[in-house]
Image (cartoon, rainbow, N blue to C red; front, side, top):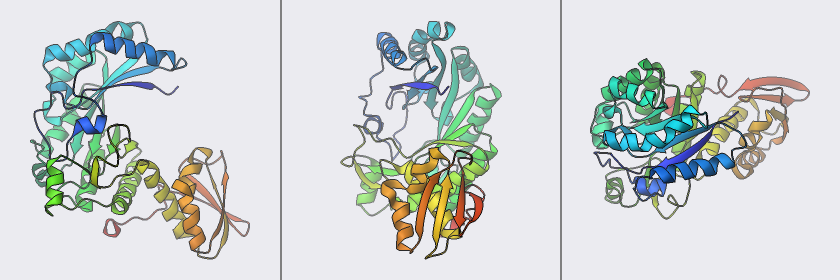
Length: 349
């Protein structure tokens, strides 16, 4: 059964830096305060009541959990201990900076039920990290990944293509190094320029050019495909749209409330464009769970094929793998994979 995540946002708490892109209070919609033990317990009870028996995981998002005073970390984790022991909770997830991780502290967290640590890697290029005000070098991220893995804790990497000084080639190199470091999963967050940040000032002054939505989707499609080829899950693409992150708070950059679907749809669109010629009549089969991705946001893929003169019918087929499509033209069927059969070049991004 799929785990239900009970989220707590500790926006910017513990973080000793102000990165040029960061405004976590806007991103999370939280006010920067820490939840009390009572608030933690009450929220878990609420989510448990609607979980229909599915396992629960508590996640502390935002901020830098391991940079909080140890007493504060203990206070946040304390209400969870009896729930972990009696099976109400399955595990705990935290997010933090790579330069606030060491083996002793990971062991301490593991003893208290933390089974997953997400690292704000962002980039593994030192010049990009410096230009973004991260306050650490790429070596800190690779060291932190190794440290967490050695303690038997799952580790995820959050990547942020499009930072100052970044290029598609550097973003791809970061992803490949993270894959080589054997992370368990990734999130891909193309840069969004938020009002009130230093990055917004640079953008307004003409000192920084963010990824457009189109370029961000193309780059993210390449990165997603490479991660899929390595069998590493990408659990999210793009910041989540909520009451804190709206079109009013976004100044520029690769922002769309359904960015992940745009990226996945691009994988299908590019594959169909490669294997179906203009003017053909075609039936495309896909796994039912991928039907909306194949059709595209607001049926965009169907509209695009229509503009090529392609008459395309889409049919669900549960026999296919989720990454596969079956293309039938004049009674001849061929199965293709968005993982193997899209030939992306970094020079096309």
